[in-house]
Image (cartoon, rainbow, N blue to C red; front, side, top):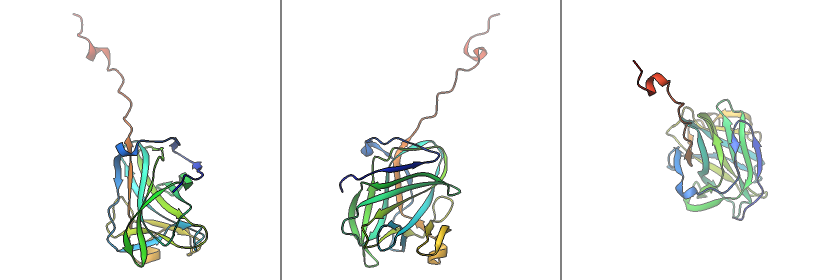
Length: 212
């Protein structure tokens, strides 16, 4: 997929939009794999005007998110881009990146749709320790569909959340309200842990032998 326009909305995170060496990035959070259990709409500009699926991660350290990878069921021949979203634990916007370049790898099929592993690279989003909701979605050109793959095992502190006026959920809502069961979104976050600042020098009575 050729690079496309980036639009950035920043709340409580710093965003550095420059290339990163994703090959050397560590796994910051792994929400588990897909077992053909469920999926929910996470798409924009398809047959559905707009919808989101997100799920929570818990960060014990300050991190720089380099890459976001999720599993998507879709019927889009050539999506025109992808979006990435970060929210606080109370669903306030932190970062929204729209119309990003992406890569996708066909890994099978599910529920009559092609199953892809979608990767957003060079994100450069720096987050403080805490709990956040993250999500990705595909962007179409008026047709097709795209869904976020879901799994039953819950990681983090909550199930996935959804939002879509089209489907009657204008506010962030637990996915159980839309599917009748609690599910997590299938994704992995790659990046770097930011080292804490060095501790200041200890008082001199611990650094030097006391004169008698």
